Picture: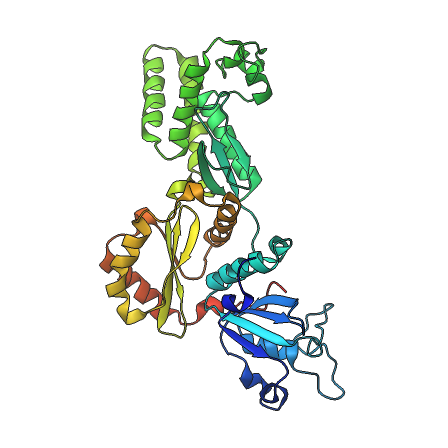
Length: 397
């Protein structure tokens, strides 16, 4: 692994100890949230878990049952008894985290290092989806996947489900008359055209009626539209529709109108987060340690960077630096591990897709001025003390 376990955690306690085994055992554990690691006498992993209240979680896990009491403990969920680990565990490590987002991030980060074979089955979030296209490819197409592919090409996302990503691609194929059958396209210029040619919905690059160079330009136009530059395409369709109507070519005008209506489906709410991933930049602000601190997280190209906790009263002085940090070049996204980058995007998207995620989330282009940003942060966290952890229980056991 190349990293010492003790370097990953802020505190380590040996077990048992006189302070932990007595009546004041609960006071030996921290009263904040975080991630904890339990290991045995040979320092082998017994459990890695996260909790909103480490004191409660560790007391249930490690305090021996009282005489006549079941080792399950009163906190055991129905049908899932909690084992008494006090006879196995010999070392306890923990790392503080003060919000749902930070707990999820810290658990993922530690689990990936300590349980490389199984960590994805333990984390509290699932995958999101991406759409990849390389207009310069020999036979370009839009395709969906759960992991970023990296260059060459452009990644779009995130999508909450595979079905959403597939629907996004279908909208582009329909609006720009793209090839639906890639296995035929790769035979160009010797492919056999499909029924979409007869319907007037494909220019048939497969059999050479449209050169591949021209088809790549069509893919590039569809990519620009998908990436957010939609005004020119909408204006072109509307102009063509009016021109056809003026020429009394009503059937053609109706067909263009249908294309326009179908293309506008790309503005559906389920696609609200979709951008080229290199522009997936967010400032996330969460509750920090104690009631008067907040912690910023900087998401640049999907990669997560945790900032320093800051007192609410000092946020007006810090906000300008946060904006500057978010807009700086940051890490080389192309050089980042595409699997780790994909998983961090899954994590961030897990919160962004929620109806009312805890904390504050701003895309880079919605940050506004530093003074206004600071005011919104102060107002939010002053009005909602402690909301972020009120519903979190022990997770990732």
